[in-house]
Image 1 (spheres, rainbow, N blue to C red):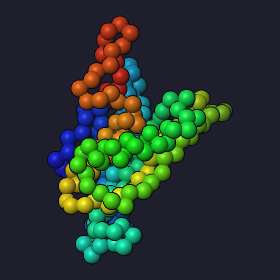
Image 2 (image 1 turned 45 degrees about the vertical axis):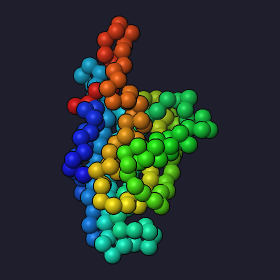
Image 3 (image 1 turned 120 degrees about the vertical axis):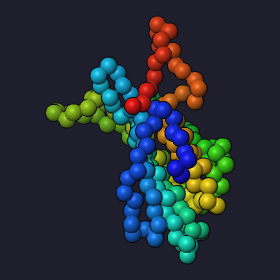
Image 4 (image 1 turned 30 degrees about the vertical axis):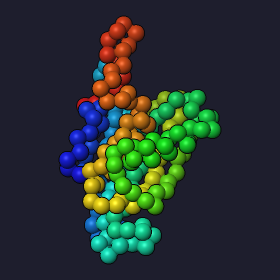
Length: 180
C-alpha cells in the first residue's frame, strides 16, 4: 500500500491498527481540508484498515478483509434525497471496479445525518453529513488498488472535482478544496 500516491488535497498518515481482530493489521487515516484565508477546516475524514489472517476467516470468506470508514459534510438538500444513499454506495462499488480491486463479500452502510446546534456548541448552526462504513474481502495481494479505491470514495464524499479538473471561482481564479 506504500505505492499509493493520494491526490494533493488528501493527507494520509499511518495510525495504530486494531490488534485483536486479526494476526496482522495495518491502518491509515485520511483527511481532506479546505483552506479559506487563515482557516483550515476538515471537510472529510476517513480510515482504511486491512486485516489479514493467513488461516482464513469464515465470516470473511477469505484471508484479507478491508474495512473503510468516512465522514464528510454534504449539501443540505442531499440529506432528504431518497437516492443519495444508493449513489454514495455506488461510489465504493464503482471505485473498486475502476481500480481493478478484486473483491467479494462486500457490505456496509450509508448514513445521512442533519444536525442543528444550540447554545454554546462550536461549529456551524446547521450541518449535514454522510458516513460510509464498509468492508469487503480482498482477492489477491494488490492492496494498493483497494486503498486507491477508498481514497476515490473519500474524494467523491468531499466533493472534489475529478483529478486534473480545476474549478473556477466567480472571478476566474482557481477555487475549491486545497490540501496541506
